[in-house]
Amino acid sequence: MTIPRIIPRAEHPISRGYIDPDALRVLYRLHRSGYKAFLVGGSVRDLMTGRTPKDFDIGTDARPQEVRRLFRNSRVIGRRFRLVHVFFEGGKNVEVSTFRRTPDPVAAGPGQEGDEDLLIRSDNTFGTPEEDAVRRDFTINGLFYDIATYSVLDYVGGVEDLEKRLVRTIGDPLIRFREDPVRMLRACEFAARLKFRMGPDLVAAIAELKGEIRKSAPPRVTEEFLDPLRRGWGHDTYRLWSETGLLGVLVPELDAAVASHDAPFSTLFWKMLHDLDARKAAGGAHHDAALLSVLFLPLVFAAIRARGSGGARVDPSQILLVLENVVNPLALRMSLPNLMTHLVKQTLYTLGPLTSTRPDHPAARRLVARSWFAPSLALLSLYSKASGRYLAAATAWQEVLERAGRPDDAAPSPMPAAPAPFPEALVPPPALARAHAGAAILPMPGEARPAGRKRRRRGGRRHAPGGAAAS
Ligand code: ATP
Ligand code: MG
Image 1 (cartoon, rainbow, N blue to C red):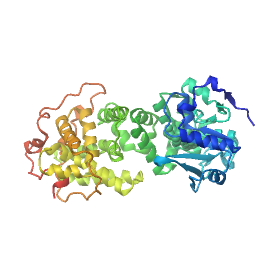
Image 2: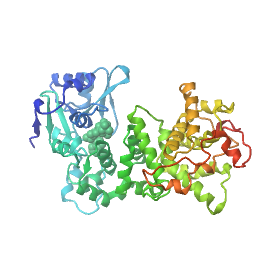
Image 3: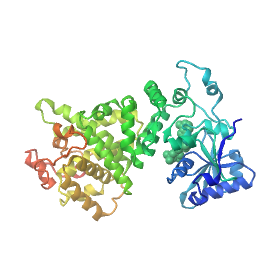
């Protein structure tokens, strides 16, 4: 048994005033009932670095049924690993898990060599606090705050790494990443969000094992894709995923379109992620469909560009086909629910009508009522800010959205039978798409005019304006 490094109350910044009162209640009740009761994981890391934790998870030596008996307002959840949710007013719940350890086959890790399958498939084994600390992914995530003494317990060197601003796996990264390849994505995410660095051993391990990420369950990877976009550190996280090659393994077509400065749509994509983060920092939130659409947009542009190469114009009616071809296969690989896939396609599709329909047109009313209107407008707004194009359209529709209040959550209806134009003109011209990051991006000539005149000027057919209304 190892003695942890103990950081007494006077020497760390965690005050009970910063801990959620309901989590404190749970900690105290466990403690008074004779159990160990620790704040664990991300909340300790965040409190130690002056951040606001997302949630306050609790670790204890009480078994799930014992915890359940202590709190009437609780429920045992999870089949694979059973933990207890203690419910409080307002839908809040505090998660209490019994200390557990890495299962035995993997505990034999140091003697193993080569490419044995270390993937953890079950981790439902109770353990000691020390075992619970060392089964965690990174040292900075392995700290405990003990309610009995108000001290921080460090079995893994996490305090030192917080001081050094270092993301380090607990144990050999080559083993820890094989056990669970999603940890490679998480390493980059923590480095990005905390502005920490990854040590050379970690970077080398990712370089060696990045292909293993294919073994991870797609829904987990999709959650990892969405999380940094939702929370405001998308730009730096995706940069690191791209630089380490993880993005190239997971979504090679996206990486090819955005990885280097002169890759098509690179500047646009990174500017949009940057702006998304800035909006989050200012209190904004976006629908997942908007976030996913940002990821799909470079692929859609690339597909439209490829179809139009050789001078052929892409018939607007073809856009649905392009969307099916681009979105469906990747959505399948990401295990997106059908409804979300549909919403993403509608969000991308509606970008066309939003740039070619005047908001004061009667058909605009129906467009505004669609559940994908807000995500699509968010996408247009990000795109126009990043490209300098369609700014007038984005502003005009934003006013419509604000006048209408929140759009209703009506169930998405099917794609319109007669598609409105998704102008090829929407795809930024090569010079703009490849402009270096930071270079001034000028509005395209004629872009300041009202959005609705664009299509007709190009001499296309006279479509009924408004994608959702064009039936
Ligand atoms: P946040 O919730 O703010 O994103 P977090 O550190 O709490 O950060 P979670 O995903 O909520 O992250 O996980 C809670 C804790 O569980 C982590 O701090 C870590 O100790 C442990 N953990 C999470 N994922 C893994 C993993 N893949 N392997 C080992 N331990 C993990
Ligand atoms: Mg958490």
